[in-house]
Amino acid sequence: MAAHLYLQLVILTGLFPYIEGLPFSVRIVNGASNSSGRVEVFHAGEWGTVCDDRWERYEAVVVCRMLGYNYSTGQPIYQTTRYGSVTGPVWMRGVDCNGTEDSLADCSFDGWGQVELNCNYPATLFCYNVTGTDIHIRLSGDYRPHVGRVEVYYSGYWGTVCVDNYWDYRDAVVTCRMFGYSTGQQATHYYSKKDPVWMTGVNCNGTEDSLADCSFDGWGHGGYCSGYPAGVFCYNVTEQDIDIRLSGGTGPHVGRVEVYYCGYWGSVCGDNHWDMRDASVTCRMIGYSASRHMYYTTRYGSLTDPVWMTGVDCNGTEDSLADCSFDGWGKVGHCSIYPASVFCYNVTANSTIEVRLVDGAYNHTGRVEVYYSGYWGAVCSQKYNFDDKDAAVVCRMLHYSNGRALSRVSNVPNEPIWMENVRCNGTETSLADCPFDGWGNVGYCSYQPYVTCFNVAGNYRSL
Ligand SMILES: *[C@@H]1O[C@H](CO)[C@@H](O)[C@H](O)[C@H]1NC(C)=O
Ligand SMILES: *[C@@H]1O[C@H](CO)[C@@H](O)[C@H](O)[C@H]1NC(C)=O
Ligand SMILES: *[C@@H]1O[C@H](CO)[C@@H](O)[C@H](O)[C@H]1NC(C)=O
Ligand SMILES: *[C@@H]1O[C@H](CO)[C@@H](O)[C@H](O)[C@H]1NC(C)=O
Ligand SMILES: *[C@@H]1O[C@H](CO)[C@@H](O)[C@H](O)[C@H]1NC(C)=O
Ligand SMILES: *[C@@H]1O[C@H](CO)[C@@H](O)[C@H](O)[C@H]1NC(C)=O
Ligand SMILES: *[C@@H]1O[C@H](CO)[C@@H](O)[C@H](O)[C@H]1NC(C)=O
Ligand SMILES: *[C@@H]1O[C@H](CO)[C@@H](O)[C@H](O)[C@H]1NC(C)=O
Ligand SMILES: *[C@@H]1O[C@H](CO)[C@@H](O)[C@H](O)[C@H]1NC(C)=O
Ligand SMILES: *[C@@H]1O[C@H](CO)[C@@H](O)[C@H](O)[C@H]1NC(C)=O
Ligand SMILES: *[C@@H]1O[C@H](CO)[C@@H](O)[C@H](O)[C@H]1NC(C)=O
Image (cartoon, rainbow, N blue to C red; front, side, top):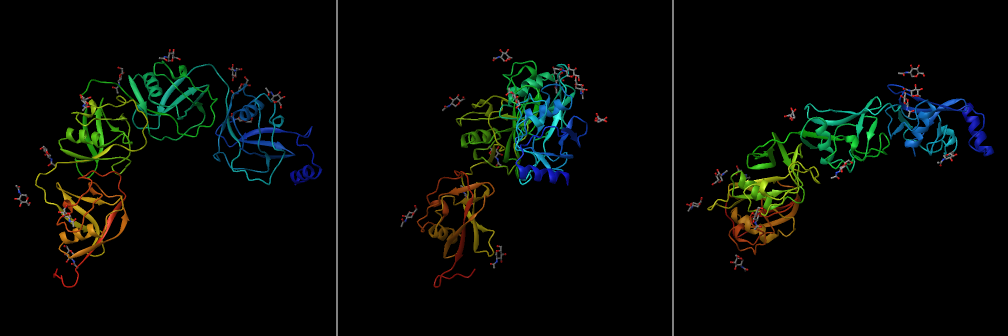
């Protein structure tokens, strides 16, 4: 009630926000300790919320100083209701301090109790005193001792290192050397974040003895850590032969490529560098004469730690992936979540080409599949040119007199995908006699022809 009266007073009289002599104080509520939690301010006789719009480091610093912490030792916790949601009147929004103010009320803000606007998150912070320069690190969040989220101990608290655009294998190398490993790489596991955030913008050149020697934004001085906490995968470099296998597929000839190096099976990055030349080297290594490469697929699983090879670029004649050009063992360059994947096969010299229709409601309708070199595979119509003439050839192979191509179906087929850009003139006896892009020479495929076969009057055969 008092707050309402006061508000009306402000609105009606247009009194300037800061009213001399009104008691004003701050407190932190709901945290596990008094050092972190949601900020509440006492104004006009009532505790209320500070909205976290514009809530950043300097605002946190001022509150922490009001609470008796050392200079410049607060950090905001962004956009959370972990310590409770907006409670009581929203007394302050748009607070903007320069960090030297003695009180939050001295900072610029939108005026007391601008309640007409929504406030999604209350201001939340973490306060600490700077105590010495003792730095420790540890890994957490993973069952493996050499892998995990990097935690740094500073001024009495274990905190997070933020993954931002800078966190790469050079930072991981420095981190892992601190644990006694010879090297390491950034882990792609997404661990959950833990306050405080001690380091952001870490950018090591890889030769430093400690993370603290690398360039970064300053202890606890980072901005918003939008990403995940930094993770590492540490290992010792050992003299070992590399090995290769495919996993996640329906057999040893198909799946995502895994490489064994330094004691661990790891991934190969499958971004747009990964092409048919790389796939053919891979398949030759495991004893097959031919291959289909795939990229941008997680059908056989996502990229897993460690990532041993990125930027693989073979010319196709190499005996081993290790002979191809790439970014260097464990030196993880740009890579999204897609592992390199292949489908390997032997071209059988005398292979019968057959066709079948699948997934149709009747035997005479469905997606077209073709049998080649020992595997049933898809026919693709990404180029949208599979027409009635192509359908007629398919249907005659199935002993119908004619056929029609219905609208193509949206479907990313299982491997292998054998044919694309089929252009029959309609008189061929086999689909293999029609012009097409070559067996297995198919890029991304998300559409397949859908065919219906029939017998025309006068040319009827009983089926
Ligand atoms: C938090 O502060 C309150 C009041 O100042 C005090 O009574 C309490 O012991 C403090 N708790 C901790 C964990 O420091
Ligand atoms: C922080 O430091 C100030 C001044 O040195 C001291 O009064 C206060 O008790 C300290 N707070 C904590 C939580 O250590
Ligand atoms: C910070 O803000 C206060 C209060 O508005 C002002 O007195 C002071 O000059 C400002 N300091 C700087 C460095 O801008
Ligand atoms: C901050 O406070 C701690 C005690 O909590 C004290 O050891 C330290 O020297 C203070 N740091 C500064 C910069 O005043
Ligand atoms: C890595 O090498 C260090 C130093 O040689 C050794 O202490 C550590 O046990 C090794 N770790 C593993 C997992 O082999
Ligand atoms: C790497 O950083 C360290 C510490 O800042 C510096 O001493 C060293 O000269 C740098 N090395 C290179 C190659 O930049
Ligand atoms: C493929 O050919 C190689 C070499 O001739 C042979 O060792 C391998 O068993 C063949 N694989 C399959 C699945 O037929
Ligand atoms: C392919 O790469 C290998 C290994 O780097 C090299 O020996 C060979 O000359 C290259 N071949 C062509 C055609 O570039
Ligand atoms: C080729 O395959 C067909 C059908 O499977 C078979 O009849 C024929 O004998 C084979 N020819 C050779 C040379 O293997
Ligand atoms: C469809 O094909 C299956 C398998 O070839 C066959 O058993 C079935 O009789 C066929 N159905 C019709 C209606 O022709
Ligand atoms: C259709 O294609 C076949 C095979 O390429 C060819 O032999 C035939 O002459 C073509 N017919 C017409 C009408 O183009």
